[in-house]
Image (cartoon, rainbow, N blue to C red; front, side):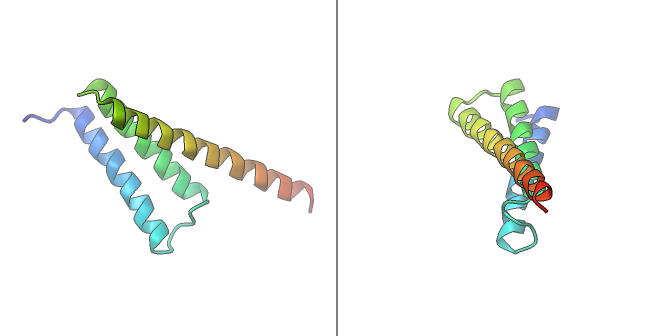
Length: 89
């Protein structure tokens, strides 16, 4: 099996997601923090790239799309909470 550049992108994305999970579990990142959300969003996007350009897999694509969407939702709701907290100081 020969790996293409997009396979490496997918591996990097999966590693980023797992790293974020480890950092949350070890208390080094907050689960609702921007760092965790960015790692998850970028990781999911990287896996999506590898699926679209490589061997497509519907279940994996659906999972990563949900992972990306939830991460973006988390970033947006965190930004709204921060903005609201700043307004009511």
